[in-house]
Length: 247
Image 1 (cartoon, rainbow, N blue to C red):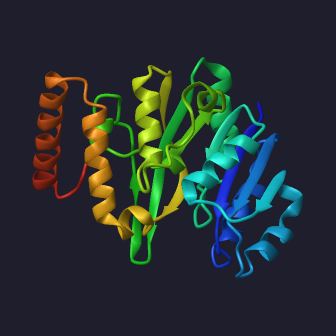
Image 2 (cartoon, helix red, strand yellow):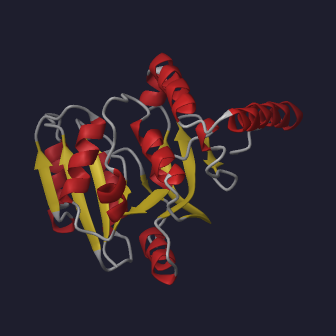
């Protein structure tokens, strides 16, 4: 099974080598590595040149934002399965792609997601997605660095909606889950994910888009009642334990 790993980047010279190296050392024998660069001027292209033997396709040109670049990456991908690795993230270990490819090969599944290790300057923690399903995804986030999806899903349900500046990856997952695609959680660490992205930097836009999505993907009064109860449970769990469900 061929797996397309897609990295979108812009002026990422300070971090991208770790991402590139984590792809190069993967044990899976069939990786289609695609890099979509937004026209970097800081040395990113020189870093990509160092890893040219590991990259199947790359392009450097101006784009209309990260989701435009991600859609370009899907259009260029040739793998059976697609995965996005940000320029400042890296695979958790060298067998991630091989292990997840085996999950796809062993069963009829459209999308597989695991866990991520969130990294910050002051330390980090593991974010698990084991409790997330179609009903509570409106009130949760699956980190996109935890997700592998069959390329055919993008043909069937479309790519990332660029009307969303921050939450297009979340909207895409909501679309896939609600369409009834076969999804599977695996208790496996997928990637080291560096905190501090657009969701944190533009909280007000994130808040507005999240509310739009909660309304858009509500399936009626009972769904909203469930959502209220779920959020109350999360808040109570946090108050009692001092940590969130995803820790």
